Length: 453
Image (cartoon, rainbow, N blue to C red):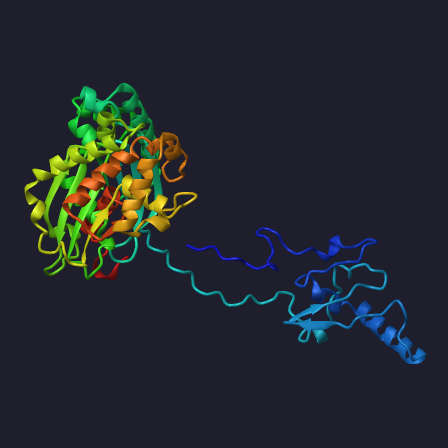
């Protein structure tokens, strides 16, 4: 709903024009254009005064100075009077109207303009919610359906909680990490309880999937935050990532490698669009994998604060070795050379690269989401980040202290992916699992059927 300006001349709500009785005194009187005009017309004394004033003017040839009387004027069916000679308003009470004048006297009550029939109440749009608790972030989206296949976000929350901190070494979620996550989830719970949610899906991914105490932690979340989260498998995670990015794959595309570089795992889906295209992009997945490595786990093993070129190369080799055992890696070999093949990345790594590429003074999702980067631009940005030390990475507004020790690990995973599926173009997506959840919830609920919003 849009707000509309009522105009400079409109009165403030709850305020009315000044009453004539409030204007008496030494200051010039002000009269409402809508108040008490008929009373003076009905008083015979004013008729005598008007006759007297006219006779004097006839006798003297000029109108009296300083006491000019203004004629009555009709203005849209109402009469407006000037003040009396002494500056006082007209008498408040009218004299009785003779019966002979009753028919010609104006009505004391203005007829109200005809009112249009009340509008029928607008149908309330259903509200859907998606929550993604990952290894590094806790994110919530609340949305209502829009045009077919689209939705409008009405509330959101995102916080870096680093739930998987220390998980690689210990195999368990640490107490401090769980505390941070629970506090963030309490905020999400409050947001959800304050709205009438038709359907919601609340998921947890790699950190809770691989931790020995993952299920125990989710029991605590249910007790303290009032939220029941489900741990999804890696195939579901890959499918949801694809569903969330469907609108960024153009109609003439023949093949896409979509990747989601997470905190504890990285999902990769190969999408073949050479045949008849389905409304759901996930239906075209011909192969997928989930690498048990993400920016948090890789940075913890190789170091994230101080990253030399040798360290960076070692991280790339580690991920490349994992990709070599992916049996379905060649399922898009027939479109790799096509100009209608490209990579599509949805993660903090690629959005950070895009922000640095655009030289943004502050991260702007509207400029990043959907951005195309060519091969040379990606090469330059990775080379630039490798050349920065930790403090320089912290100082960049699109990286900041929260990502400064993780961004190069993400770049290493990206380099390994580009080595297997070289492409001239990379499309950046600032969207992912939550958008995929919302799209699937709304489609399954039928909110876009039959022309409905």
